Length: 439
Image 1 (cartoon, rainbow, N blue to C red):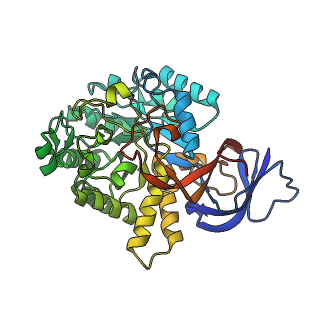
Image 2 (cartoon, rainbow, N blue to C red):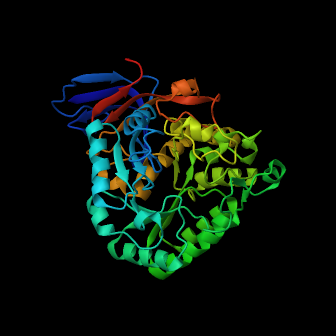
Image 3 (tube, rainbow, N blue to C red):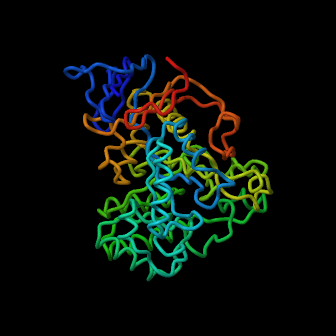
């Protein structure tokens, strides 16, 4: 299939492209940008007038809920949500049931995803067997089955010696360890950010020090081993300062933040809204503002959806009893664009196009770089790279409602919000996998 996307504004941060050009696709690859290659005859043409043509989005935290939690979501529903959200490459944590700690389980998941022929699924293998923190997994075998890194998901390793050994092993073979910094004991059982609001509401708290103490430990182990670590969903100003210092020191570290945390604070819990029950918890306004600034200055490498579909039975409960999590695949683009709009509005000298390009970079090129998926051509539209493309209308506004979401998980703290940016088509490996309206 030869495909041409005409008259769209191509924004490809990885290659410094930002302007109206035609994009030519052949054999699942980007064939040319601007002028048609010799002898090119399109079998399909998409008129992208008024649309942005961007690399397919790369999401670093998507729980597909398979295997084991099909009552919360299915692979089919969440892959359709990825298509509707313009996400063509996604990373899934290992906290399934059973845990992704054996090659056969990883191969089964990848096989199921390939059969659906939609987004590219890149699993993280469990760092320790069963995520119990007692013995490390066979990382080489898991890598051979398709894992791109190793994670404990939301389960801290209580035995620091085990984490040390895991980092030593990972360094030996050049693997990346993905860790969410959370002390195993401080804040355990907490459901909200420790602060005046949690105290007034009578909710158990998770203090910022739960994040910073874990970060200090991780950085000391990195200094000892030289292992590369990707930090997942940093949530506090103090944590970001530690990451900024570690990067300045030259430690091989990267980090992401959840798209929800770019905009919301603990005040958005309101009157015990369980849709705002997430992990890590929404923190104070100064933390939210620090996250927004860190996305701008590059301390935060990528924004992820932290997509965690939860069913009604586990969400429609009192705040402290509700399961944490929110759907996010279909909101990632709009929430990144909202950050860009807010940034451009706050800085009169900033061009709207520059803010937009930076937001797209954080959910495509930068996310691909820190996950290593850039080696597979993800997150860019350079000639010869995989033809994974997201076409969206930056001016289109839509209201976040359960009926508008393809994900089986309908719970998000943004229900009822009107957001800008709507995906019109998603192309995977040169094939139109999703199209909202025929143009």
